Image 1 (cartoon, rainbow, N blue to C red):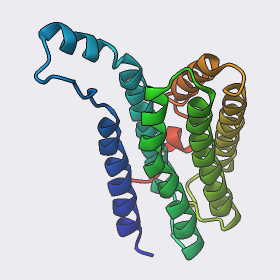
Image 2 (tube, rainbow, N blue to C red):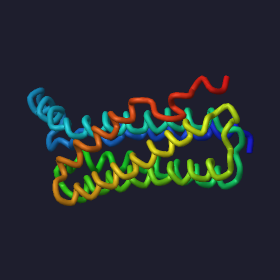
Image 3 (cartoon, helix red, strand yellow):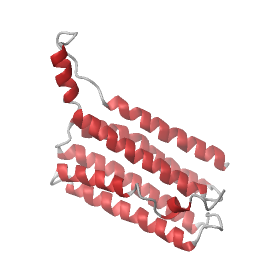
Length: 202
């Protein structure tokens, strides 16, 4: 598959998912429109969980896009299985806005935090499967060192374990799991593996 078309399609899906996030933020229907200024202010203030969930997911999808870019910049070829696994990853990514709106509406309820964790864990799983396939097929550019590939594999596996733990914790302590989702996103703001090697291939 043409690598340029592959990356362009992926970028478009990431952009679409980010755009959908804002649709999860909506004011409630007022009984007697238009509302008073006090009613509108109160309604806006009550949206803080939605805004927090929006900010978290915007960061998560942004990091996913950056990781995707860093990974495929140093991949030399795209085969059918790579495309198939990438579609699975993008399918989960587009589901993130729904999980985000659910989390924003019910931030202290276990089903909401579990659904969000399940979505991010599924995303991490797809990233790990995709990376494992690329490693197995030796699809990386020759300039990419084995050490960089190992570091990338470790970082992706740690992410999967962390999201799995946060997801399971949501069944007991939803607020704690929400905090863990934020911490995991913050951890991946630090470059790891191929993210450190963006200049390996010009």
